[in-house]
Length: 363
Image (cartoon, one colour):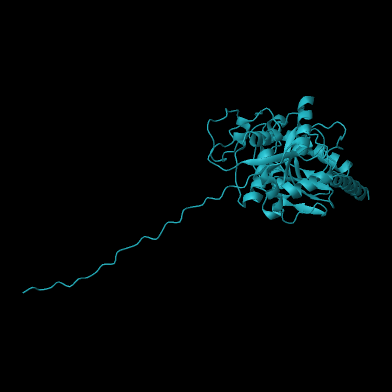
């Protein structure tokens, strides 16, 4: 009898431990690839994930975390957006958005509609139309260059119908920014105001270090005609409204934007992310990404990151509209349509027909 009682106690104790384990697991199941990765994670990472999952369960959040490709890196290595913009600079950009003259290419670009994108639709995913180029992996704090180049590559696909792989390192080398930080819109300004074109990534790949701007002009036709601030207020420091971002996505394509990231964001694997309520009055941010779609049912943006495909949902994330100051510094860019190469038509080569003349015999 005493033995049976002890068995019951052990059973109840085991059940209690199991129930606590289950309760500590997020409702969103961890993808298999992350389960396999986590086996080899360092103890400090495993403990961090345990604490983060407890937080997710306690707050009833709808995402999960795991040992991603950037979990063991410092945030300074994988972010890199400058936080403060001088007041004079903010005023200058506001004035620019009010007084600028759009290029002749602007109206032509808008005639080409982004297939399947309507601002009033409940969801949109630019990936389904082939506008989003493959996920890349930044090698230093140059996320701002990846955000800008990603927006340009998507715009180029719309304008020219072909997929390109432009160089983030070239943008970093030639714009006011480096591995320690920069701003995505500065790349757009450099391209539009100075009529500069980007080099191919194969020619100038990401070296993970600061380099000087190369002399000469690349042989590419990767030029931009126009750029602008997504927010209807023209304030680059604020968070653009959901309506403004949706409209920009349908008019111009995926937009460069900012977000505030932390260790929780760093370990995101899948689901709909929410870290903290956005501060619309005084937002801050430390990372630049690309917004490529939305889903009203999820209440979230679909973003493309630059941390490789072993982070998030193969390099992408769903993030709540009102989370982590997402949508701050949102900006769009228009790629120029490449000039058509008219090759001269060569006239057909006339060939002389061989005439066989009989040989006369004079004998």
